[in-house]
Image 1: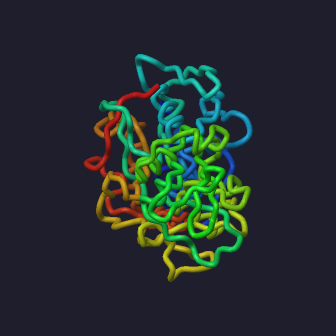
Image 2 (image 1 turned 90 degrees about the vertical axis):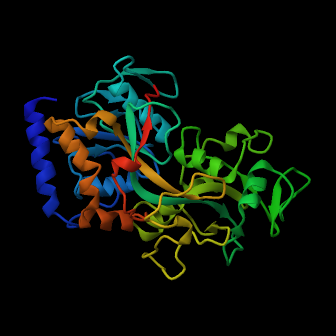
Image 3 (image 1 turned 120 degrees about the horizontal axis):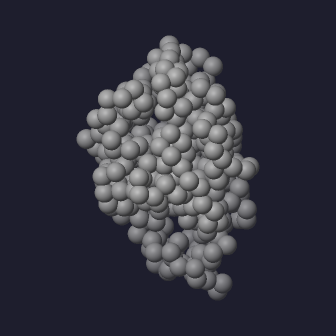
Length: 370
């Protein structure tokens, strides 16, 4: 990155601190790239809160691109890139930009794109790393929880499912109050369910499967039911359709912070007696419930824990580098997240602020994945 770009980025980063919440754009399509030297791609779960933080919040030096949309994205560097749809794809694109041994990113069709370090700076991820190494660091961002959304137009009270029941529903296994009907579908409380999953690179999908202890079988969830965009109520077409859903995204959509994909008759379940949404909140002021856990403690990584930290992934070298580019990027994913303006936006979008946001000591190392 040249000195002119660095100077421009520095001016943006310094000036936005005074903006507070004034004029915050809560949801947006892809941003204009002019004057935004840092690009963020990846998770659908955190894309909307990143839109809020970057379009008029304290992170305006970042152009954050949606996981799903029409056509490719055009980076400030002028390169076009097939849209990285989901956490895994976002991390692969970041890896390609910074991996000196392999700068090639391939999209789901196999189309190859050659990227450079100045092309992509941040990957949004709703799941922790799956590759060993120290090249990248997953920095804690904000707390989410994952539940299941389902369609039941007769519902007046949300199901309170146990971890075992969720596992049985998504593996079409009888037990713990789940039965299997003649068509092989799971039934609970008189509701016949059709389990669905988001697309393969979804961080919400991978986290949910681990939290519930599920091994996916196409005999229960055929391939055509494993392609939905994550956290999109439009996947719940018929009565009994059920799919993992970010509780933060559900809250943000109901709060009007972003486009609402949910519809009448769609319900978000509680899990193991823990509330996905605070029952004391209502209307367009919903808040996270007890399913989100303690914001001072890192959630356990174990079956039965449905609270999760989301992450901002950056090159590990950013932690100690002293050049202007790295300092601005480091501040973006650490200190700027602790400002009053950033915390207010994070809350509006349904996430719980965690006390260790941007803490390198709680970051998770990863190798390149491309």
